[in-house]
Length: 395
Image (cartoon, one colour):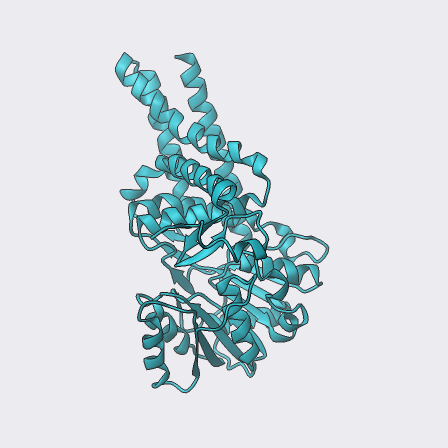
């Protein structure tokens, strides 16, 4: 009994430590941009790669076309979609001459589809700045002008914004805190320090000076990297360019995963990349959430069965501490208070996704995502090119 009480206290302590670290990191990247009323002379080329995005593409593109205070051209790349994405963007292009459409770009060996789409679109772009954004992101009308003003004010070469994540399904509510927490923790103070190797970015919004992008070869040298956003930021940082990263929930919003199944496979696809090749961390990543989140549940159940009021009280208090810490990230993800009550289930999901990812890497080599083969990690681009027959499809 004393052991369970002690473990609950340890669980609470670890939760509070993580919460304090998250709050400190969130404070570093928090941003209260001034209202931009000026008109910027620089031209922006906004690039949206899109594959099977018929649900969101129209609203996302329209939110980009609605930008004020900036001169923009918009290039949408319909990357071999099997749904109505191509037809939708073609229809939009008839109503606005600023919108250009590229259909079904050839995918060279060794390239991932999204990186290839962005690289080919960038070759057509004429703007002083390139803006890479996803085809399901909704932009505030002043997002581009505000970001551009910050780049010019801080003399940045690359500026990435983290959006507010909209959650609907149970698994989205369970996984969003993990995703947001992990992303924010990457945002160290070294990002904007020239002699530091730290770099981070969010693919939802990346603004980069065209000359800097072309100087490093764009996505050419990182064509097989799954995390194209972070990889591009690291490439630019290593080449001596200045980076910036801010949370911008007031300017951008996105539904990261489209339902429970999408959330599960999205985590499976990305989880080994988060480890960065340090597979020795896998047991720790699997077991820590189990200990932290399930200890109070087990202790509470034992307390109820044995009629130990103190143990039940400590277990409930531990759970409430953890639940309350979720509200620290409320500005970055819109969770449902009832659905997020199931947050301890994230321990099962993380462990399951990690085990599956390790299995696919060892025996299959890749997973299927949006109808394409995607390496899990540890394979060369040339190996990925021949993996489609042995890969597992999430659909």
